[in-house]
Structure formats: structure tokens, C-alpha cells
Image 1 (tube, rainbow, N blue to C red):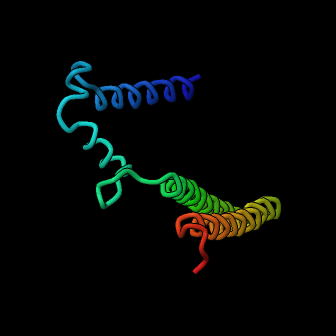
Image 2: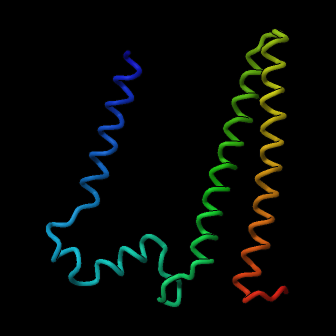
Image 3: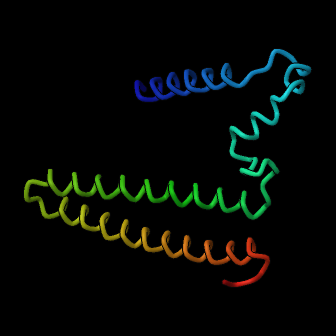
Length: 133
């Protein structure tokens, strides 16, 4: 019950902080001036030439972010399994669990690297106007 209460409290604090960070006084102030362009640049939606990004570039950014997140999850799992192994104290069941997590993490990393290679190849074909090389 204490964990649920703490998680709810942290969520409320986090969400209320986001709500106050993204707010306009009224609709006229949100659309007046250069606020939308500033927001687009801040969100990395506008490319370096000043124009809006193409669909391929946006998909590429999303795929890169998702695969980076999966790489971070891999590192967390490797550290966790290493911690389990080091604290096993000779307990064969804990060691077997740690090695299992480590093997499955490495297989997952290979799948993520393969997905990145395939998506990079496919997106490079689209960005280069269906021309290889």
C-alpha cells in the first residue's frame, strides 16, 4: 500500500510539473509571434535548412529513439544480471537465473541491432529517392 501511495504521489508531482511547463496564457498568445516555430525547432521538427522535415526523416528519428531506448534497457538488464551473479554467494539457482537473463539480453541486443540495420537500409533507400548508393 505504501508503494502504491508513493508511486501515485510521484506521478502527480511529475504530471503537475509538466502541466505548468507547457502552458499559454490564452489562445491568442499561443498563436501570435514566433512561438510555433520556436516550438517546432525545440522539438527538432524543423531541419537545419529551416523547412519542415520529411516523413522519412521523422520516422528515422522515431526509430532511432526507440532503438536507443531498447539499447538502454539492454544495459540495465546486463547490470542487473551481473549484480545477481555477484550477490548469488554460490547459490546455483541465482547464478542460473543471472546467466539466463544475460543470454536473453544478448539475444535481444542482436535482434535490436538487426532491426536497426534493416531500418537504416530501408530508410536510406527512401531518403535517396529509391536509389542505392
